[in-house]
Amino acid sequence: MDQGHTFVMMIEKFKMTENDISKSVGKSIGYISQHISLVSLYKDLTEAVETNKISFSQARELMRIDDHTERTRLLKFCQNEGATVRVLQNWVQDFLRESSSPPSQESQPTEQIYDYNDPHTSRFCEACGKSVEISKIRQVFYCPPCHHAIKIAISEENQNISPETTQKTPPEAPQ
Image (tube, rainbow, N blue to C red; front, top):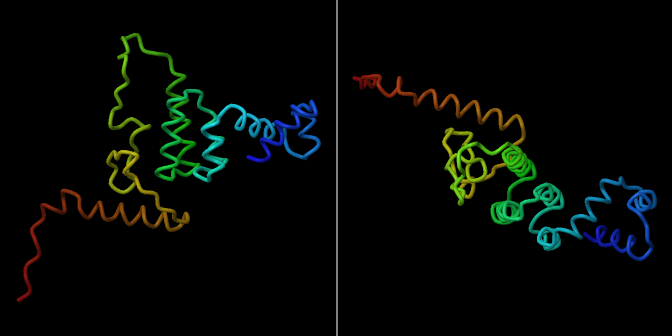
């Protein structure tokens, strides 16, 4: 955040362009632009980064959303539920994809009603496949081999609980 404020000061005080700053500090123009945009346009995101409630990477993803209400909603999820950057990227992509699709010919309700399977309010559980409200999802971090092993174990367990196995007759008691 300090860099963003410094870049803004360089523009205002020394009349430098983003290109000039890029050359002088050895960073890309995109890097300079993102920092300047964050501190200049998004006070809520700037404050969240400065107070360590979200990371700069999360703020950068949230900056992609122009809709203030949606951006604020996702910011609160990041702050309260600890959404990873990867999860946030998916949410932002989903929102941008949905908001860019043309409206249907049918009349739209004035108040949006979120379906339980709406990707902004729920996700599918990797273990059971059921739709779960985002606020109730818990994140667990595994390395790729462990994640794969857990998915296989869950799949095998689900096969053991399938309706076929529940209808089988119980084994006879030993004599």
